[in-house]
Length: 132
Image (cartoon, rainbow, N blue to C red):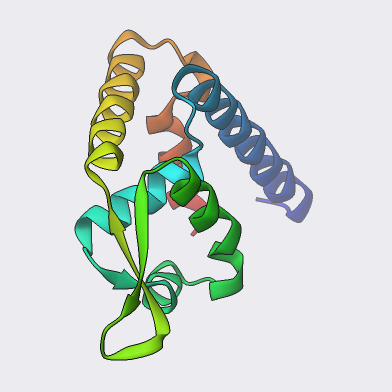
């Protein structure tokens, strides 16, 4: 695969991810980033923002806006760590769990009915794995 073909494939993948994200936000009010963060928080309850950033392989500062959005929506709780007041612990709220289940159901329905056609979640993840 030539460098330009590789670049075009990555660009097409990015466009498909944007389409999935736009549809998800329009239909559920939650972005792929927010959905992904909630999924991580369910798998790692009461994790610090720094540990979550490490888990995701990103800078903690990159999470700040997403955490604030989730907190404003009432989907997560941000609390001080009782052992270290400098650290913030993140937890999913009951509403966050309910919304996450709703979005999961919506994604499964899209996948099974092929409503996302060429931008299906399955195709996006398969293509992404190819590049990583």
